[in-house]
Length: 83
Ligand SMILES: [Zn+2]
Image (cartoon, rainbow, N blue to C red; front, side, top):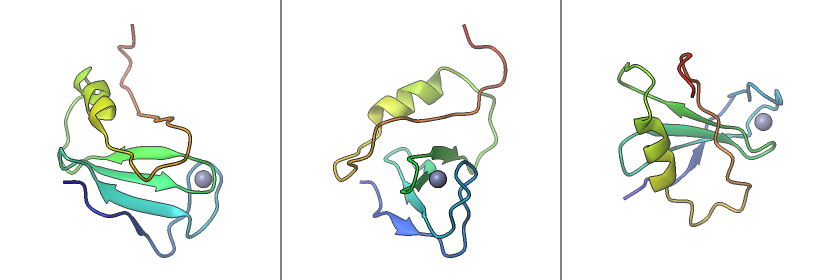
């Protein structure tokens, strides 16, 4: 089960630079994801360092967004090998 979203006090969005708009939650796969409610920025925060792989996209697809009314736009950092 995904954990409830919670705001991170003092966190600044890397995209829109708004403060206190970042929520953090954990997916079913225990990936931590932060999300900006102001601009819709989404970012996976991995506890475990691992190389970028297509597996990331799978996790995105499996992500639950029942209470997420924002545009489902997820931005992941990829190390090069795209296409
Ligand atoms: Zn933002």
